[in-house]
Image (cartoon, rainbow, N blue to C red; front, side):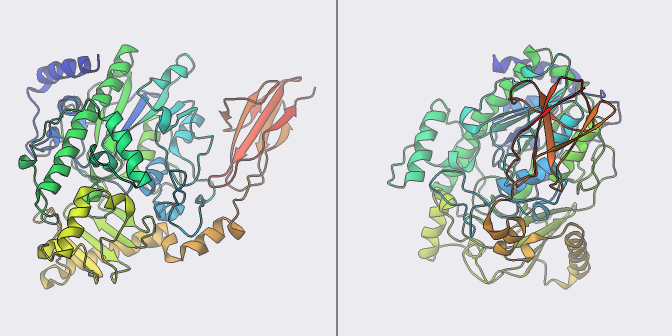
Length: 571
């Protein structure tokens, strides 16, 4: 059933556009048409995946579903995440705020798997500035039904106010969660496609005494059981910073195969939308959470770690098959989606509505601690140049990270480094004493291996990019300026998670106003004799009648949620 949508899209795409293949030229997308006041919105996020898609010009990729979707969508090839690793990136995507403002810049604050550690001084949840909300919660305040399928990974906890329905990774599927909404209610649904994750590149035939490797290998054997192996390792491009060996080529080919296998899930989601008569009433966004899960890609601030594909299909197919080359940051998604829903950007949003507002000149990104490996780098990019500032240049770029080290490519780098067989470009991965500043011409040097920071011919560009970064840091702040334990103490005094104050009620002319003494707390409410299992977002006074029982509960992101409070409404 899933490929029925692909076949239909292929036919429609040809009728609309001929064969809309990528030739690298910019085609101005007309996005000026009206969007329905309350459109449905679906956001589909693949894991660990750069633009390895045929429609984005990759000659190796075998991606018929993604290519068919591109023929009905607008492609945004200059979309960048705020981090090259998932949790910081996802926290910025969901809030429209950079991770170092939120305190979610380290990877991770808590361990994702029991028995592991987050890598920081203690396990904790970050506490964003008061009042910052995830945009699905703001959509709920606008009347939307919101669902998430799979990963969250925000590092400020799992606030119960964000989603009407949040399906954990262990139960994730392409189930159409929007069917739980009220009749006629608009919805926002987020799907997380995990099969392109770095760990799915790990060999399925490997045996190991390492518990983590064993768990992942067993999962891969199960989840990839019917995956076809269609990519010839000899056909892939190996970037100059990675060794060109059979091991590395096999990993890259395996990643291509995983993308081809994973895109079936996109087809299933689109088919379910069509089955419910919703595809042509829904804005569909397809992107990824950061770049490829290979060394110097994932966990980096190079384009290989930050640049991601993004496509948007509008219900009326406006701009179908065109390319929009404007710079887009992940912090732009929240205000843009709110704009589609009839809302306004919040004063604390650090992104912009890329449909309604002028194009941005720069995108910004950050890299900090990963597991137990401390680091701090910041990056700024315009439409051509990338500037990177390394605050800890005394450390090598590639240092042992257990999860990354399980990848055969990483093991190959360590093997060749020990044997003295890396090229000079590759040796930079393992040598300490990185340059404090890096400047790259991404048009002439897309792999970012020729550092122009000391080139007098680029002194003016270097000064401009430095100034742009300094201005950005001054505007958004940077929790990484202080030691992590000092930040934790400011958020969790004494290392203990603070609790959100329970809501209080004030009655005014038959309306209940709900308040919490915790600054920036979100409040939810419900009615009934027993505590609700589904909570409504409190966005203003609630009309009540005598004899009703009103329940309320509150949470500030990063805090423990309050107890549920029961209010009996008198006459």
